[in-house]
Image 1 (tube, rainbow, N blue to C red):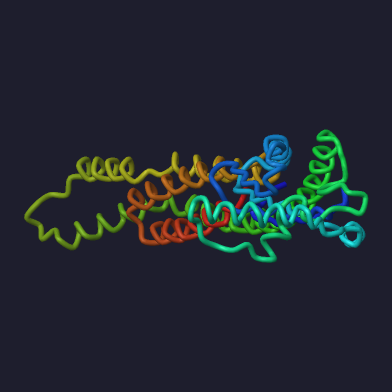
Image 2: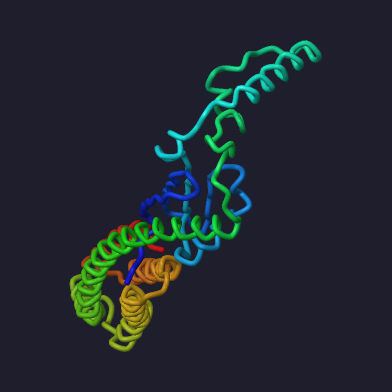
Length: 298
């Protein structure tokens, strides 16, 4: 099973008088990078939440956004703390007079300050909860959004895996054509060389069968591509095995694609045959498409 590095998931829960929303998205990245954004007073849980992400994702950039807002029931029970508002305004006046600072507190600024709005029972902020309970709920909410993200990564990975398998089949067909053509390269060269020498021979020089055979032997050794074809066949099998496994395959596939490109380049430079060279060029083009697709796999 292949996993894409691209995905999105979200979830929400009610806790401590707040509605907490979790949004997770992942994109391609060489390593596993987790970027977490959440209320400043919750940053103490950053390491725990990052480890939770890393349990699910081995490669890719993951952006996690956690927001909170008072639920309607809790907001209905809030009252204005006028004493706190007066204290903030007096502090602002003191700053202006003592330090010459400029600026005004807006209504939005005041309402966002701690203690300005409090519950009817006189407790401001979140309902009293233990740090352990909050940590557990944050992990639970994040885990739910990660499950949604992973489902999307699996669906996308299945599609990419199927596309890569189809492209591998095309490479294997080209490989079969090369295997069939390879033995004919020497015989075609021998026949063409013999014909050319026959056309050039005007009787002024004898035809030396021994030297002719040596020339054919040197050519056969120079254009032999059996080793490259054997290694390509091995790389194809390894690619299929990786795509059908359960481990992250992106980096391994990238290495195998580089190796296949290297073998294909060698074949193109050694084959000295028009049809074989065409197969090598087509294989290189297909390998480039595979490389682009494989870059999306974890």
